[in-house]
Image (tube, rainbow, N blue to C red; front, side, top):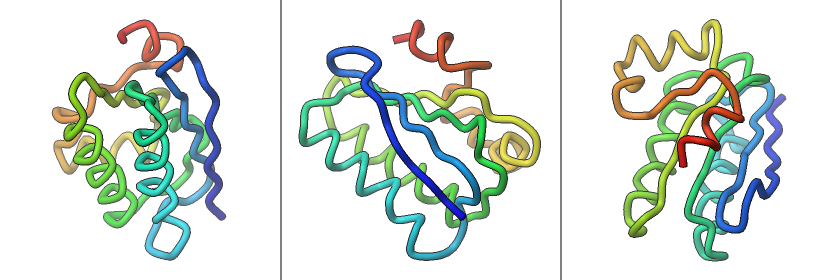
Length: 114
């Protein structure tokens, strides 16, 4: 099962918590939809907390790429990944997307890098 929720870390920064399995299916669209909505609300800094994301497939990775493309369209907006581990971190490493997305060991480090 996939769950997504967010909290405001600062005025224009959110931490998006993703939990469970981000894979092929209707639930995966939630990532892009949330990012688009938050951008429209004025959020400019996004931190994805991947600590409780247990599985990700190419569709899930594609959702992060699509979200990143939305963020890149907004001047001054940024995206950072926090606390990715195990198979999730390996999926980004194998696809070489760890050279595109900035990864941080935890939420605090990702937020401080803003």
